[in-house]
Length: 46
Length: 551
Image (cartoon, rainbow over all chains, first blue to last red; front, side, top):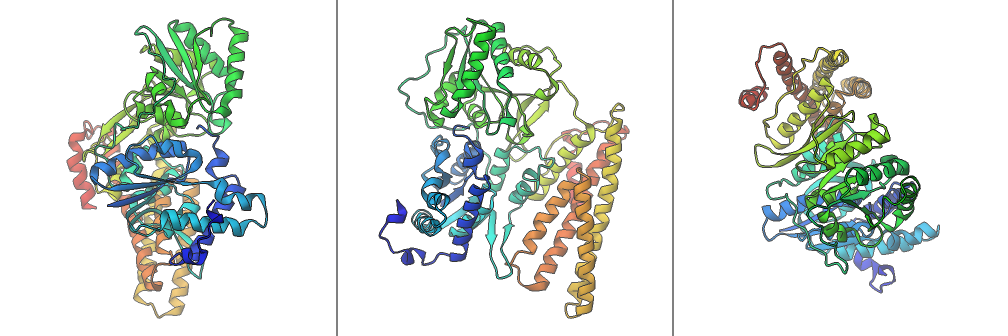
């Protein structure tokens, strides 16, 4: 899995807006927690 | 040309994005298209031969650590960084289309490097973050589809308009899956009917007893028919419930006359089976879009507040059967009647889809009532807002008939019309006041007392518009459109107060112009009803265009 890669996170983070990245993570988590994510609403196969 | 499309919604939304992708390939031969989808629904993207690179977002892999462990957020962040950096940031794209319209997709879209961006983007600043939509068709989607306004444009068609494509987008070209067990050939005198029982939520489909009744009537009326039950492995309970009900009430009827495909094939592997069906009967689901793409006739039963105008079957000759005003028996015989190709009217409201090439060759799939009359005022406003959108967003004046408002039996419609007309006039006046106050501030940017006073008045206007927005549904689309445009003006990317005021003034000006256009169309419709205009046919579109141009 990507998180286990030995690639240096700092290198990957170069050029990435960290604030946007954190907002992205928070919004993805929020979608899951309030069951708004497509996977929560959608049953496989629809 | 490198194009990236974010579609992080569900199977149906992905299938509805595929015509746009095909249109992009036709419009930009040789372009490379990357599509970003959730892993769960990636099979839907595999339908298209025009997706050059499929990037999958795995919710389980990336968010798993934080969803299962309160201390797992750092690990999820690390995985997210790897995914974004390795999958999305290695290329600068010429065009980014975010067709998802969620906050998460907006943040993701803003991370990707692209020269031209359409759809929802995020803006961050010290004063807070906001969502901004700059292109007009995406603003239309946000203000009309998400707000559940009077939109009559199919989502397929809106996506194409956002991308600026259309010609060659339909019929959909599809990858043909190779199946170990392809559908057996159907004898010419046999009927094969596909059934999709379940929807994303229970309120969007019928209960198992009504489904059993529909299946029984199909099999009884059409003795040469067989049923294919589509779906996923999760649908096993629903299918068993229906089969049990049929077996208990009509023993032997199903014998050798059904196949359960649900759970046996992946979503895109349904294609040969769907294509082998004469009809697919379904609530509002991805199966409707797949059948439309396969050219198989759909009988959609829309329930749970879904809008078939937006997300129903696409193309010519599909049927929409509104179950709300029918009992199970009436609905069942209506479905069987349509399968038999009969024309007799029934008590069940039915509409038929029609594919209408527009003046510029950009397609539009519309729904035409078959055996019922739409409420005249709502119908007028739906058509008027479509014309307004084409004019505002696409610079087009379409040849559609402006509905007459001349049905004497629809007295309630007349009341609504008067109410809406009053609201239009009020909206027009408020837009003028808004413009005036913005201009006052622009002319006196250093006068703090005046700024404070005028800002308070603007706040008052916004409050009054919000009240109209909530109380008069027929003018709500205008105010929602104004609100989305205004949000762009207030976005942190704007440069200072004067920039914001100039953009805000423009929003009020556009609101007033939009009201003018709707009022012009209304006047045409009323004159037609009064007999001043014999018939409002496409031949009048030139003069109507001139009217619009003169505004």
